[in-house]
Every structure is written in C-alpha cells, then in structure tokens.
Image 1 (cartoon, one colour):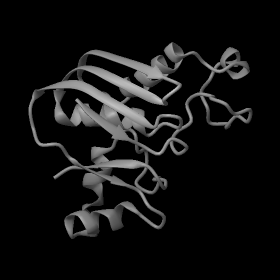
Image 2 (image 1 turned 180 degrees about the vertical axis):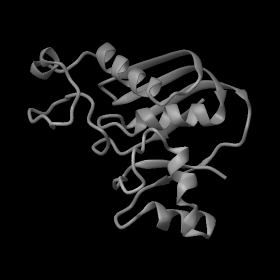
Image 3 (image 1 turned 180 degrees about the horizontal axis):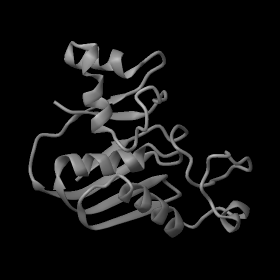
Length: 164
C-alpha cells in the first residue's frame, strides 16, 4: 500500500466540484452539470480514466471520498508499470489530492521515479536532468502514454513516470 500526494487544484478536469464555470473540454452529462456528481459517479469517472490507459489490472476498484479529495485503488496489476499508470491517471485529475494505492503487483519490480512538472520544463529538459541526454525524452513520453497525447503538452504540477 502506498499513499501519494498530488496538486488538488491542478490536473485534468473530468467532473464539477464546487465551481459553477465549466471548462469546454469537460466530459460531463447535462444532468451532472446542474449538480455535483456523487462520490460513486466520480469513482466511475476515475475508473474509466484508468481503463483508458490500457492497463492490465484484475478486479480493479476505485472509490472516492469527496470530503478528503482522496481516491483509493485496489486490484491486481500484471506489472509495476500498470500500477503506476493507474495511480497517475487518477492523481493527475483536478480535485484528487491523495491516492491510496492498494494495488497488488504480480510481477514485482522496482518502482519508477516520479517527477512533478515545474514552470519552464519540457520533456527534453526533464530527460536531460534524469538521464543526462535530452534526446531520451521519448522514454518519458512513452511511459506516460496515453495520458500524454503529445510530447509538447505537459503542464505545471503534472506528475510524470520516469522509467529507468
């Protein structure tokens, strides 16, 4: 089990919570737009987000506690990378401050390093700092797909997986 902190006010906005303005890129139904979604509805949105990462996690369950902005993940992942990608898919969402990771891994492997994007960062700059070679930026990009759709589209506060 692990507890991981994220920037609560930064990240992809996939649901409304305590704010009236809607981002045009949000994917919420009209019934959700009028009212805040329930914790179960938010958990279902987070589960869908993990499933979009093409990870192999048997028995994947997601719960969300809105009073603490905490998501809890459980299940059995095929690899450590699948576990980490699930954690990041949920943690890089606005209004998720803490992820409790109770996912068990079948093929035990060392955990990747993680990096929080700062102002002025690019994947090349991060690769230079982490690997000593700016041209290794594709390692980082590939490790964070499909969460990242383009190597030039990262944002301050985003947490990225840095594989060895």
